[in-house]
Length: 173
Image (cartoon, rainbow, N blue to C red; front, side):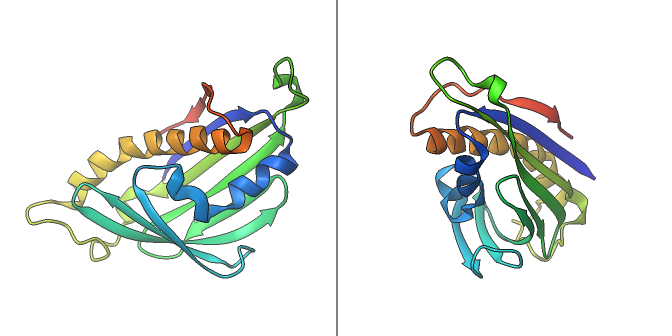
């Protein structure tokens, strides 16, 4: 299993950060390859989000199910088909990270644990002469850059303005 774990600080308390983390339907604004999100459910545990992804000549819909929510600190998810993957958004108070002029801060963690070789080869329509191994070799490095972009843009939404965001990469494949 591969794992991506990164974090950054938002200058807001967890109670203000968590609704943004939980709002999967807003995620297409945060990434270049997520084109649409549809939800089956009310956003609580058991809800399934269809995440429509497009990159290069490939399109894929990942079906992500919310498995646990502990507001304002944790939202866990897993993919329900095609790829063995799961993850968590975690928000922890970190008031000591608040800069001058800000009351408090929170550390936002994004974690994804996945097996890229567990992908169902029939779930993705690959162009002729393109193997799943070729796709995995090219997608794997993009996963980290996409996760970083999502977290940076999420912080911009939370704080209402763009700023340089310091990302801490705790683990990558």
